[in-house]
Amino acid sequence: MKGPLLQIAGTPNALCALMAKSVGFKAIYLSGGALSALSYGVPDLGILSLDNFLIEVNRITEAVDTPLLVDIDTGFGSAFNIERTIRLMIKAGAAAVHIEDQISVKRCGHRPKKELVSQKEMCNRLRVAVASKTDPHFTIIARTDAVAVEGLESAIERAKAYEEVGADAIFAEACHTLDEFKAFVKAVKIPILANITEFGQTPLFTREELAHAGIKMALYPFAAARMMNQAALRAYEAIAHKGTQKELLGAMQTREAMYEFLHYHEYEKRLDTLFQ
Image (cartoon, rainbow, N blue to C red; front, top):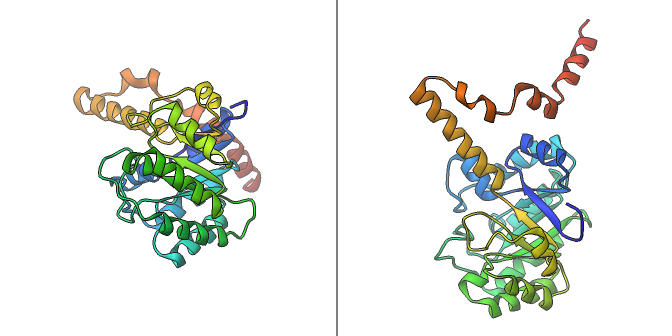
């Protein structure tokens, strides 16, 4: 995590946030896709509400003080909804959000058939978001999906407009090459975020490659969630088919390791002190 590029780890729950902090991440992320899948069992199609997100934001910020970036999709509605979203995210302890320029019936950023609102409408979303900040340090990142929908030139024009109305950074979604990222870096003065998600449109560029291209933030939204999902499926299959999980013990986080992250023994000591 050293150097000019900030790596942001996707943490779908509070325990993941504790583990990410333990290995040195200086920023963490709550993905709408991960929250939808892991906590609600639905796809990332704008199904969840603001309150669904706030539940998890509160859990994570209660567990760690690491700055948390939150995916707020298109802002959860009209201008007044966006205003409420920003106010409540700050109240819940989030450090930043990103809001996107897709239509409200949104799709995953790495899927086809995405549709965008006009540049004017997205700028209005951003104006409201910026004006709603009750904390001057709160960061608002403008995500554009225009590379895949309208092409790089249009995406760059959108990024410039988003910077002009007060966005603190640009989330350039679904870029295919480092040259595309470099074009964003050259076009605006605010930082560029690269979304390095697996099995998507963007290659898994290294931290060094991204830093060399001028990228300031690299987001890894789903890596831990995918690993967790595959491990869980393996455990269920072993128990269902073989009648035991013995062969999986070597791949499991031990009870003591989990207790370390949760400070379990410290809690027990406090309990013993309180109830003698």
